[in-house]
Image (cartoon, rainbow over the protein chains, first blue to last red):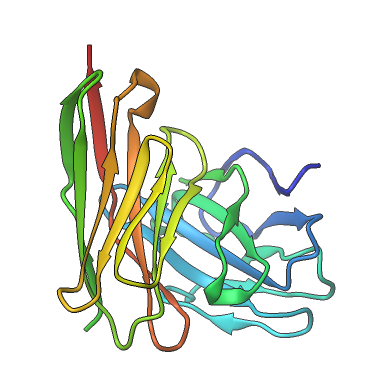
Length: 113
Length: 109
């Protein structure tokens, strides 16, 4: 059982480039989330999806977009990366939205130069 | 505004007991989570409290007081592998998670 798979594990990206972080889950969870984690700031929600076909903005959505074409996949796209988007990105899923515990992917370390 | 406060760092000795506190201010309240995160890894679920009182799970216990907006995580018989960050997260009235910045726990032999 894989749970949640994120790719790539790490990436160095030139500023201005487009980048998609991939996230796939095999638990058939309805809710999925993208967080970024920066030292001293804790986890900040970027975008979320309560069910396939719907998405919503979190606390720090600017510069990011998501799609949820099916239950399993929830990619995060940086249209034109900037250095302030250097962070560790975690994808997570939950069986029952905000009421349920989160299962996290292993994370993507992204550096924008 | 909504806020979760927890100490930045704590140090404890192997075999001892440590209590990590968390105070929260949220718009409404629908429960509180504790997660453990080892360095370089993803957070993993430890506990969920929605009613007042103590929930015990082996060496780890979590306590909630809704009237005081307060929770703590109690770790007993500390082991070196308990060195990690511990994240407190409250659930607001819209079922959104409000995260604390985490408490880094250092265990010394």
